[in-house]
Length: 439
Image (tube, rainbow, N blue to C red; front, top):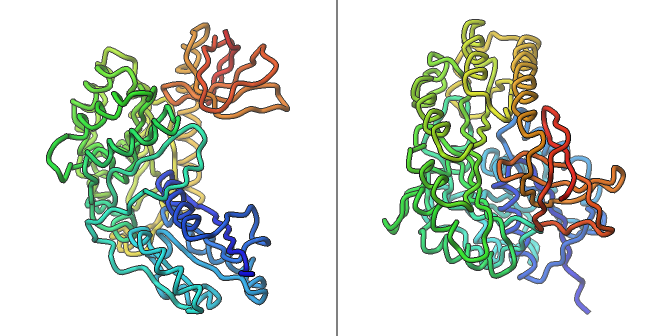
């Protein structure tokens, strides 16, 4: 009797990585592997990695070191994703018990790489085609999220922001044909999903290779697929954010009233040093389009503090931007140098302690803005999509169309299932969430 082929996969990083893992899982299952819940039960251990954050590669090697003992028990290891693309064959030198290293653009070759792995090869790589125009087909995608279906519509990035490693790990921008996107959206709807999230490093930089639809037109078309109730998209780049995206959100009720538009800094001087390709004024023009919409649209952003050369005045300009835009959510980060990026040649004279102070100043100010923003929802009734439950607190966990977390109580004995929709009256507000009761 043949030995059962089992695998364990751990995912680091963003939603695109999570969706890539769905593709990897689907492919492995198609090749006869069974997913297990722990490394101990797995014959093949895979880490799908992210290199955006500081020391990402060290974290991966630490994780590998934790389990290298299991290599002597016949286990095999694979490193996938951005750290794999970034570090390449150096991974074999640092962790000789790793047998397979593959970047995301090579996942469509996984079946043949698995055959080689099963034949006993110990140094298999898929690193040579970041620039490919081929898209990894999703026919074997094993969707892990019970309520949201992800579709990657564009891979890679051509922007080359000074701090960002993505162009070096994901390659150039490659868009997927809009007909293919819509076909997958219909398949997802047929599987019972009611929410779709379109993904891309710069999702709104989408250029239909078929020449049929702009990004805004594709958004609208996905929103009109029968059975779909919510459509989200992330992450947008301000340079390519156009007014017709807002017009589409206004026109198509299924498009969620939320835009994530990373600004990174409120200072035009720092934005230029970051090579962001827009000024503070350009960014605020796009915010004005969003705020002029007929529907109130929630806005979130990313901010980096402590970029090389950032002064106290630059920080003040970022703080002023927070107050002007009144974001509903801010993801704040301290600058850290990433491999291959232009910012590594800049003098980084800001201490870690000072970066931490600046980040806390930004987050404290944003918390007060959110406290005011969220308080405006008190007494409102909003539709919430259920994502889970917190039995210890007797609450159901969900999210509004504006992407705001909502925790609510429900009179019925059995909690509504993930993916269902409930009308909730908001009875309490907090800086990062809303609370209420089902009505």
